[in-house]
Image (cartoon, one colour):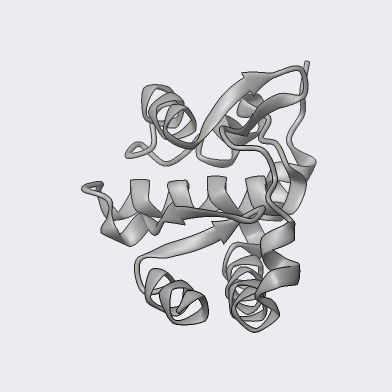
Length: 130
């Protein structure tokens, strides 16, 4: 049944704006790139877009997260739009209404990620865009 399927999906995927995306920890990436990818997903979930210039400033001092790696991470989950990089799939907010219990679990996951990435979020917010 659908709620059971959604619960099973949660073991390997997260909801980003109502669409399931493979968890970063399951991607064949270095730990630093898994962390960067999760941060990208958090920005997509929270803001609906990612500004690459700001993202690069967040990871500027991390040699493991190069500009090329950021480009690769963005291309996996987003497309370039007018406001930066936007999710490849349109928002599917109806999923939250159909399955509120599962949606709540994913909302709690994103709240934990906001706490985990609070420093990155602040750096992203304060980054300069020319």
